[in-house]
Length: 263
Image (cartoon, rainbow, N blue to C red; front, side):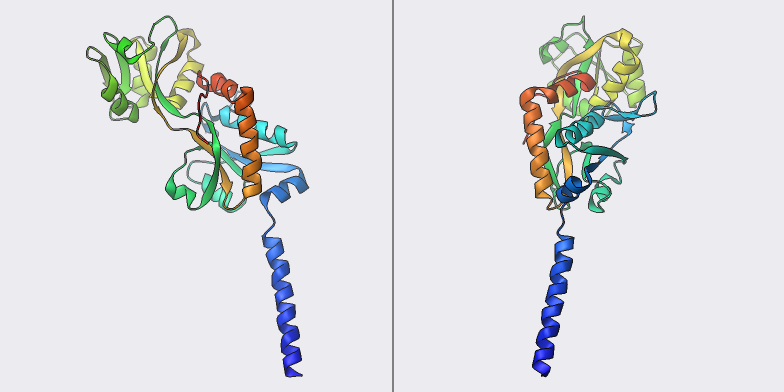
């Protein structure tokens, strides 16, 4: 009798644990399909990837990518505003299904979240007027380039600049950009985000991307183990690369096509 009661108790406990386990195992993809809604974390403080426009609505490359994924999945998109500090936490606590917020992939982050294929470039580059011919590093000889002292672009440019390049170093990004905008230098070496803002605010300069200094692409963050969602998003990214839509987004916001991005 005692054995029978114990066996029934164990069986009931196992059944209960099974139900709990099933509920716990519900994936983000299941929930998206059920609710027809996907929550995507985006930045609004990092133009041209994400910022608030004059209509007070989020816009930028990351916002376009979020809406693109939602449209391809046939679901409504809820944009969730995050910062660099809390974007991964939002994913871990299921406040967001995806993070599209200039997220670089590294070993530490891969311990706590998963990543899709890369969806956009993030880079340091050299910019200048469209009328100025700069097609290779050799063309920098004899030209003045504004750069922020000690920044990544300063380190990279120092490695490759030919003899005769006049590097004008400034103490912060604002001073560097101001030097270029005011005509103190012919070229500007900076990050894509800084350049994007500069070109948006100063269209009269007709500045454009010239040469790449360093490439470190962005990836979309997915909750750990959410393989169904990651696979679906990867398929969307692959098709967008094939169709040229990824290149169009990069051209629109960064002034250059996305080019070859890692899987």
